[in-house]
Image (cartoon, rainbow, N blue to C red; front, side, top):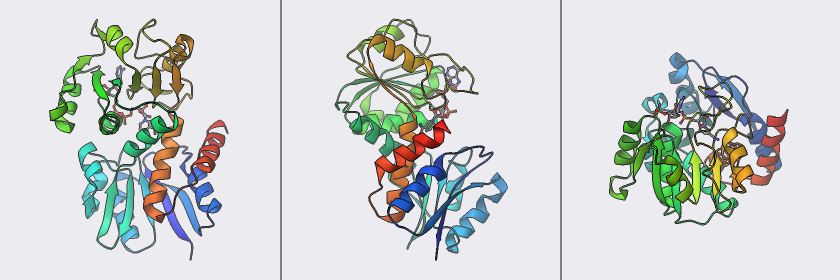
Length: 278
Ligand code: NAP
């Protein structure tokens, strides 16, 4: 029997998840089909019923369902609880389990890029993706400062996720931002600034002139693949990491959860990059 997996969201639009997940199933000879399943909010309970009935073997969950799906599940992992978002659902003997693989994906992206752990980091943003990034950076032992358009959201996020870490926070328009950026060895952008079709396309969250060659800049925005922030990083001689790899690696972590098999990461990365170019 062919196992069915899917990504659910609404509206779903074009997603590259089927391309790299199917490539992984095929590479390991697993009889499975991964599809994109547009799912309106009212249909979330039906998806959960399909999982319980064995009609779906696992799902990835994207906007706007990452919070609402929790109501349909029996358990969530500690990381999903901490980040407040579920992007992967698996079927276990104890029922439906929600997980958040963005955290592991960010850790893997930084590890693959050879970014040393335990360094001063500046996290830009305080939305859903920022929560995953904050957990990942703290797991690495980085000393994190958070800057966000709405300062209060940064303070609320750090207080909720890691009250004991005492992460400094500031507003994105704080005059100290260029200095804080210059002091960081790692900068991670999780704001929507620079996103194609987003609130500030073509723009960067940082002013010109604060980056330098000893830094790594990771922009999780993946459309366009080279954002204005990454162009600033390249011009300054800093190491630039694109968001697309994170998108594919969160899927690789989901694959491991569903199948218990080691995901063929390089095959998934190649298939995802090809699908993005197409
Ligand atoms: P979100 O929860 O809506 O958070 C948006 C963040 O961007 C908040 O920090 C918000 O600040 C800030 N922001 C929005 N508009 C802004 C503007 N005009 N000026 C300054 N700051 C602004 O969104 P999200 O789910 O975290 O996603 C954020 C981005 O990450 C999106 O581009 C998404 O595509 C990308 N993403 C990529 C991956 C991947 O796998 N590569 C995974 C998840 C998300 P306020 O708090 O002030 O509103």
